[in-house]
Figure 1: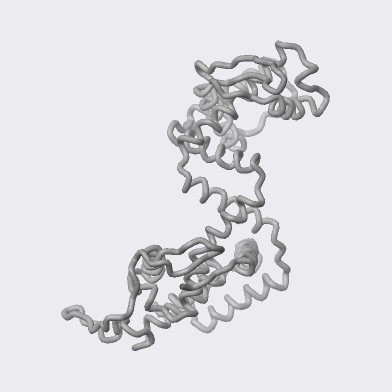
Figure 2: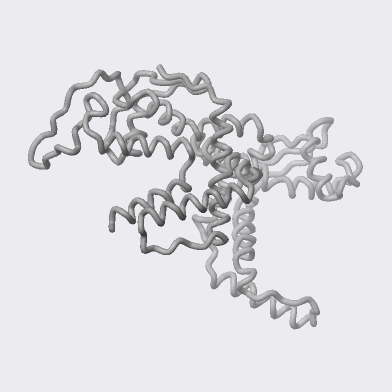
Length: 346
């Protein structure tokens, strides 16, 4: 029964990884359970825990060897070996031991993040990239000094008390319904307050420079963009008085300070991962999946469940629908990435 349950879990797992990963996992699993399918592989069926396994020395390349090119970018054997070992839980550790089809599938699977990152760099605007990095930075700062439920409740009670005292007719939402949003607002306010402490803001009002924030120049274009959002296009930098210009710089300051902090606080690798993840999630959300595709995927799981004679009851279609939708959309996005990718084995 354990084997049957494991089979069902494997089938359900088909919808938790991409299409190329599915084929790769199946072929690797088959390879690991068949005798002598790959030269030099340890024969797992004859493995004796009290004796050394019989291993033939295969022809294998240096760990520094370039084993593939993906859109012109090199893949090193050391990285492929590490990824393969992780995928097979240490049972297969040498990329060169795999048949060609499996090597291609492994490289495809390894390349998804890189291809998504390349697409993100091309398709996302600088404003979107900045917003992604700023959000990561803010989340990290919030985790360092989290706002407690007790702190939020105290603020809520004070706001509620004021509303009652002022005879406000506006309904007061229940605490549990706004607790999360209040916590985020309080956290953001605390972070920005810390950032703005001892900040040096100077109004320059030159031809193309509006001012400076801690020595970083703010262009008139940036100031006008901020004004456009505030006044809905009714005001420009050149049309407002000095006091309003100073207020605009005060308003711009937090975002510019965060951008500056991002450059030093968030590693390049983390930025690349963030871009790839954002691009992928955005594409998945915009990808259409038909009802026919969803039902076909559910039927596939249902048939596998019956074949495995599992006692675990399969959730109804409506309950799995959203999960299936996300996974099928993900497979479509990855498929499109692979179609445009240039992958060459070395």
